[in-house]
Image (cartoon, rainbow, N blue to C red):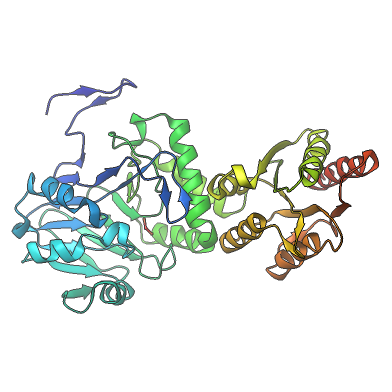
Length: 407
Ligand code: FEO
């Protein structure tokens, strides 16, 4: 192939979809995806699938079913579907397995390989007609000149998940791990803006994988013990890591360890701007101590963005008015979402205004204490509209919590 030069001046020495000789990306780009089961994907996404052509041919993962035509055409440009010997399903979530029933019919000679729990999940999604063989950690598959090795990664992030490692080229096909929701015509990390790439990788980790961080840390140790040292990490969404693969592994280890910055996130909603005024004053108190602060009103900020901001923060302060003796609905949704993702080692504080009963702060405190989050104090409440004295208390509240994390 002729050399190509992208906008960042990187010289391409091969087919722009090729990871190595005979290993091609055959995925699709979903430019217009903006809501990925509730995760707001401002930059779209890709569904990555990889075709490994050797004496035997293996396809690793498929794509979402609405892209089946484009996907099958892409594979046909490289090989006859009947020449596919193996279809490896690293993960059964339908953004990766959606075309499996269709391609299994067309690739008549292919054996489907999945983890034991992957096999169960395929049957539970698509019925019993597909013929599936199971693989487990350490199993190897010889394709001729190269070998595939399998590593089960249960709960990273589904029970069925696994990695496929191409031994000779040291390529880890990591499925959802190390992914990014980033639609682009480029395939590799060094072809796009590094800041945008890392921002999306961080957002992806926070919203998809943060709740499973203990599994990730264990799995990295296991991969090292197996002697696997990937040079290239090819996830199932976004760009392939070939220049920054060490950097993304280090970032994942830091995020999984809960390493954070002197940063606070104030998340709130408001009815008549009383809780809004409190949020501003608390932000002033936090800022007075020189720490980074992000103020995010729930009805104008999506949960995915808020969660990404929380990942590297030490403090999360949540404000809710009391509405009909309950939390404000958007605050309730936020707490449900964030509790599921179990952010590590944060200090939580609560505030809010009320008219007569004022349960919101008490309820928020109870909800997070129940799941083991550390709470700063009993919280701050204001009846109806905060006066100057109340606002001073809010500033003091912000100052005190900032000082606590600086100690
Ligand atoms: Fe990208 Fe868990 O699916």
